[in-house]
Image 1 (cartoon, rainbow, N blue to C red):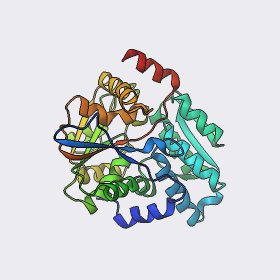
Image 2: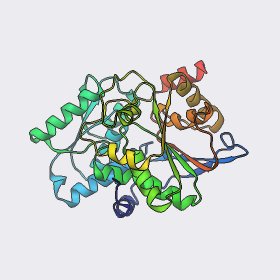
Image 3: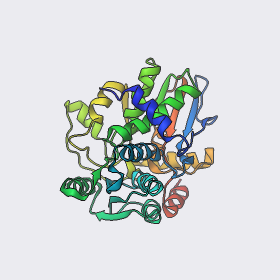
Length: 318
């Protein structure tokens, strides 16, 4: 199962003008004699996260289908909710975002400033359950942060840009939470450059794909705290991403929390880029030699929304 390339191409046309075409920058620091490592800088999006791509595609599609008159409902650890609030504001459609109460203030405050209604919940898993129930009871149209065709197609536009900017890619390294980003990127790149390897990176605190693929089906996991808050949580049992990941992802690696923290601090000091925990997974996999790069390799830096106090603590700790 894959997201059709024509859907991703249509999403690229639909969201042009609303989102940034982000730079693909060579990293001298991460490159080796055997590999040129490039960083895809989604950190420079208007909402400082790639999530704006899927959010805008979903909101515009809802408007095209006449759903713009009602509320849109989602669950988010922060970045998707911010993207939905941003896009909803542009289209004057109310957005309700169910969020875990321990989500980073940098993300929650940004959603509130954009005018969305916040519904705090005990955890991300609870936020997703309550949001789906609220929408099903007539509260509005449910837009999953990762298991919605329009959201995944929007995320897949990252893959289109990667192939256009570097046609000879040997591998792309992508963080994995609910699997929406890697499903979109993988669908786009496998259609345009089948030989390019798609490599996912999960965090040890929450690795539903590693465990689910080993079992042959989605399994519940015990989610632990992580600085990669955007990657943690159980998979929706009905998610479309599990089958897409099984089709388009070539390998998945798991990063522990200590290595994630060190990698984040290293990116800030070496690349002079502010990133959040989820974005540090790819660099961490390279720095710990879980992935040995060969040829031209792209690493997606997914977002920069991190609380200032946490960032300072990580830099001091490193």
